[in-house]
Length: 126
Image 1 (cartoon, one colour):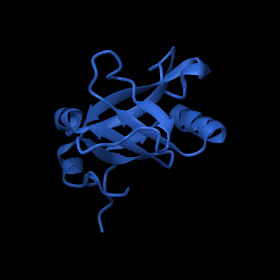
Image 2 (cartoon, rainbow, N blue to C red):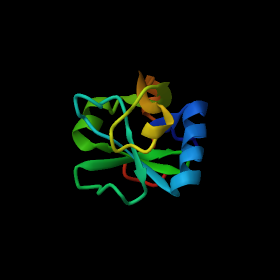
Image 3 (spheres, helix red, strand yellow):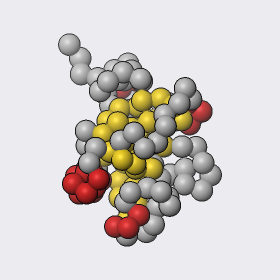
Image 4 (cartoon, helix red, strand yellow):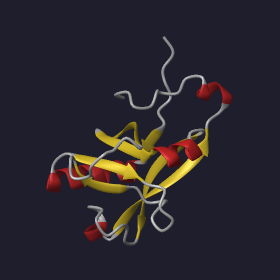
């Protein structure tokens, strides 16, 4: 069986921050919106603190945490792998990493033609 390609991954720095935040806040979840100001910063919440709606897509997991994206944003980025990293600075006001002096940051890269054939389906558990 061919291994599926994840639609979202995290750098080692992001995974370390996720573990630190899970130690402080318990289970977490992420949401990537299409907002103009924080569009490159996924928001990190305690799991269940953000209401996921019909316009949200479960893209995958990072660090054992579900990662959602708004459907309009998914339609725009569906041919790219999201790479979640950490950069200095303050993120969204309600995102849990704010007090740490860093923020999560989304980078992306285009999938290869071969990877497009092996993408993990959206809205399916990773």
